[in-house]
Image (cartoon, rainbow, N blue to C red; front, side, top):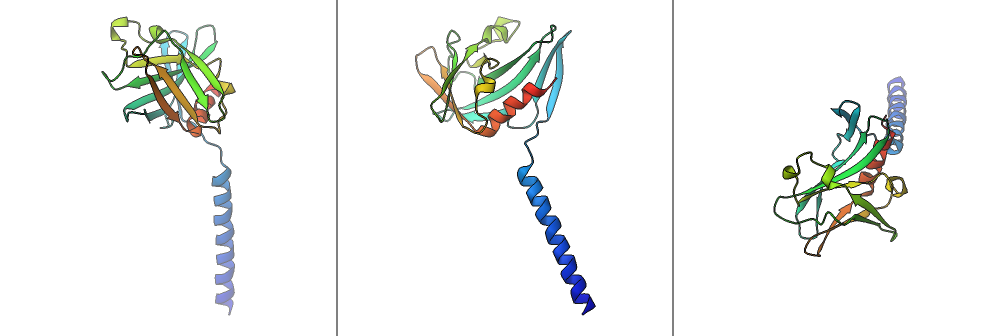
Length: 179
């Protein structure tokens, strides 16, 4: 009888511990692993190392794009958030005179300025299959729980559409908290 009571007690305790662990995991906030790089004296870049910040996105043609969000801290201690989108070489010609358009599932539209000329010190390295956009003015207006669609303008007047999951937006926003 004593063995049965001990078994029941152990089962109840184990069940309570498992339940507490499941509740803790269910409500734990997403954590970003962030890498700090010094590009130039006094200029620091913060990049998330978890896969959602280096996300591979597919466009409507099935082509892969790499989306990299990062924060650059300037020597005067101001910071700017950027999104770099890189397509497979030769698949597109992005129009760098136009902004990136972001539309959430509620129909809200935002634009991010194209800052691609600043992406490479040597312009010969730059290409028409990559773009860099300033997210700083709009990032905190983006709802972390709502999916986004990014629209990239091209030189042939077509548009490239990329869908972004809400967790990725949350990841991008978490970079603003890095010092």
